[in-house]
Amino acid sequence: TWPTPLAWYALKEVVTPPNWGLFLNTVLFNYTGWDSLGSVAGEVTDGKRAFPLGIVGALLLITLTYALPVLNGVLTYPDLSQWQPGTLQAIAANMAPWLGYWMLVASLSGSFALFLGTTTAYTRSLWSMGRPDVLGCQAYLPQQLGKLWRRYNTPWVAILVYALSTTFLMSFSFGILVQMDVFMKNVTLLYEIAALIYFKYRQPDRPRPFAVPFKIIGVWVMMIPKMFIVVTAMLFTDWRVWIVAVVFYGSITSAYFIRDFIQARGICLPSEQVILATPQEIESVLEHADLAAEFITDDFLAFRDDSDSDSDSDSDSESDSDSDSESGDDV
Image (cartoon, rainbow, N blue to C red; front, top):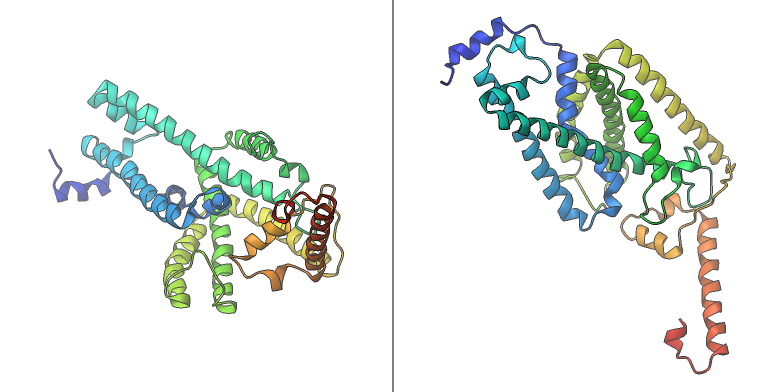
């Protein structure tokens, strides 16, 4: 039978006071991570259509996946003070043995799918930071992370490092891991929000494949609730997580500004393996983002012009040497 509203209200007498830090961080853990999709945007076909449909569909599935089992569990076993990890599987097994096995398989499949998704996104970030920039300057991370498996074009070194680090973190408790993971994500989100607001004010008319509607007003309307939730969750986080995060992000931020300070004075830390994009690749990127005036130096533009002229001269030489070939084929 369905419990009456008074029965639902009576549950508060048997439920222990919540750990708000763990609660908020667990909720954010289940419903965040959408920004990591940008790490694999270059491998998605028709991203303008695929990303919105995928996010909306995934959000509905996530909500149903959490809401339906929990609702059924509360109706079947309302004494929440006795709930432990694995309670939902036990409740399902009591209802029907096959349902218990189904819940177990679903939990394992969901965890494995989550691991694959985070591996795909995060390893691409490690891979990109292990590659030197277009001018051949030193990468932010060791260049071994920028290696690809030639056959499948996958960042195998970054995947290996990510898998080993994940194996090490499995020794910590779930509560500490959730708070640490979400705290790191929240700091990253605050960086992203600050960058979004900054560029919306400084470059309001810049071409953007994905743009927040209603310009700067739309940005503030969407970001204020997000910032409130993020900051609230951070304030309730365990103090030990704060110490780890301050040390980690302080080191990363300091290293970034030191590198930027060195390169701003014309000192380019040479890379052992310079990976230069072709002029066609650079022009394809700049077609969607007006970045030439800010990020491409005169030296690189001169290099591109020289490469074009060399290519044209080679084509002319081939045309002169083979009089039987048509001009279009030589080009």
